[in-house]
Each structure stands twice: as C-alpha cells, then as structure tokens.
Image 1 (cartoon, helix red, strand yellow):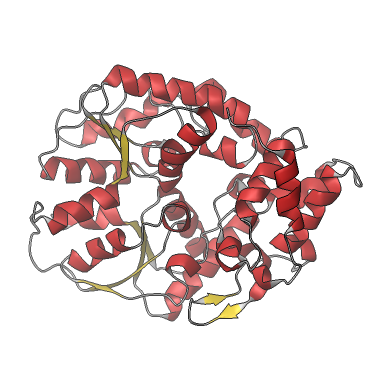
Image 2 (image 1 turned 90 degrees about the horizontal axis):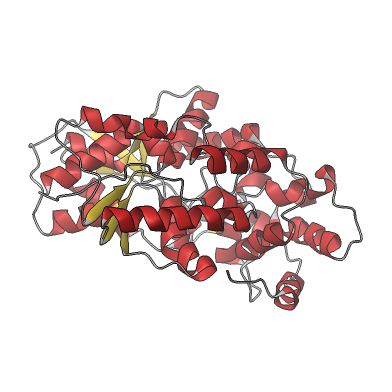
Length: 386
C-alpha cells in the first residue's frame, strides 16, 4: 500500500496562497460562479471552504489544536468534488491533499464514517442489508445472467440496492448490443467511501475481496454504473494497493461507442423532452469523461439537450460525495437542491446524470426544493428508447 509522504503533504498544505478563489470566484468563460458547493449552502464561515479547511488541517497536524469531533468537523464536510482544484492558482491539488489529511487523521472522531466502515466490512455494502439483495434485479430482466463471463457488469451498491432500474437498464443495453455478460455472485462494495474518508487500511482488505471475486468470475473486462466505483477500481486499486484489474469502462463510454458504431436500434421519434446533464465529479473532473454522456443524450430520439451554465470542469457537485451524504445529510440535500435550481432556471424538464449516487441525492434535492423536475440516469433514458 502506498504510504503518504508527510513532508510532501505539509508542503502541499503550505502552497495555499489564501487567495480565496476556491470560495466564490466568478470565471464566466469556464462557468465558475460560487466554486465551493458547501460554502454556497452552509453558514459561510471560513471553514466551509478549502482555504479554511487547510488552516484547520495544518493546526491539527501541528497539534496546535486537539483532535476533537468539533475541531475535525470541517475536514469531513467537504465533498472532495475537486472544483477548487480546477481553479486553484497554487501548484497543488487541494481536494486530493484533504483526502490525504483524512487518511493521516483516520482515528479522528467521526461516528458516521466508522459506522459505514463497519457495515461494509460486515455486509459487503454500506446499507446494512443482506448483500444477496443486490442481485434481485436480475430476476426482472427477462433473460439469464450468469455469474461467470469475460465481461462482468459490476453493479455497485446504490444501483444494486437502492435504484435497481439503473441496473436493469444497463443489462438491457448490454443485451441489445448482443454482449454476453455476467454479474458477480457476491459483489463486494468497491470501498470508495472508505478511501475518501480516510479508512484506507479497511479499504485494502475489501479491495482484495473484489480482486478475488473478479478472478473467480473470469473477468477480462468490467463495466460499471457508478463513477465512484470506476475511479476506485481503475485508479485507487493500482495506485494505493498495487491491485491491477482488467479493463474497466463506464456504461456511458461503452454505450456511446455502440451508438457511434450503429450497434443500437432506436424505436423512432420519442417524446419531446428538454433534458440537461449533470456531470458527476468522479466521471468528469477525476476521469475526464464529458463527451460520451452528451453524445448519448443527443442521440436519443425526442431529447433536446440543454446545458446549465455550470457544466463540465465547472459543474456544481450534487452534494453526495466525500462521505458528506452520511456525515451531514441535510447539507448534502441542500447542495442537491442548489443543483436542481440551476436545472429549473434553464427550463429543463429532466436532469439526467451518469451516477446512481448523484441520482439519489438530486432526487432528495428536488424533494427539498418542492420541484417536480424529473431526475434520471442516462441509461434509463437510453434503455427505454431502444
């Protein structure tokens, strides 16, 4: 497992120029306006955006303040969305640096984090439920899905256990493309939330279970629904744990390629709908996948793709990432409602995304806002048009 270079971490923290553009800079060309989603939707104190968080981190690491639940709170109310990194004028990655601080401070008081770790290690999922339930959706697709295949669809916890329509739609797309695929018999959580909140040792033990499961299934390619899973399996596993997996691809990348090759048949002109796209942070800023989801939406009959001002590299986070949905649920939902308002302002009837976790939190945001706007995963819109 890769160790954190403490000297380098402290040097990175010292790179912060205290300029504050990570708070609310306006950069019209890029679409930045109110960069930090937490600052926009909280009390506005210094510790609600990255400049203040870095000062708290330095004080904790230097032992100038005690490691109490109150003093570490600002370390865990960040979604790690990376918007500050995109606009930071200093030569370091603030979001990645804060993630490393959480790892160094992994014994800091955080009941929400510790509860999730326990659930994942005990149940292989963060929802404290029988993990076999994540395969229930397989019974609804109308065809056999084996547990061994060269292409394995890694469902992820949220699509498998909270939003099974996403898993069903993904399976239908794979089937429509005549793709022979399987689903793991006992799929463990990818462990992304453990990594993001600093419990990397626990995540490593979980990662080894996933590696073994893919090997036993005969996987040569892995298709995923969740960008958090994609980033974890594709980047964190080799970088942190030395675990190399087969080719890993998000379903929107796969589906866009199918559309470009003419391998999907659409039913004809569909219902006219104005749809905007929300860029998930892991899929966009972490992995640079911006075009594929927009290609899909533009190809779906009846869909008019309209863009929010805050998009691509400047997209506002949905509010669910970095462990915030568990640590401060109300804050997470307020950020989701903020994103919903941006979609409403441009007249969108549906806000689509490519992340089950984003769908979940945007739906909560729409409910908080009292809006009837539709929230959908792209694969659901695509599957119903085939």
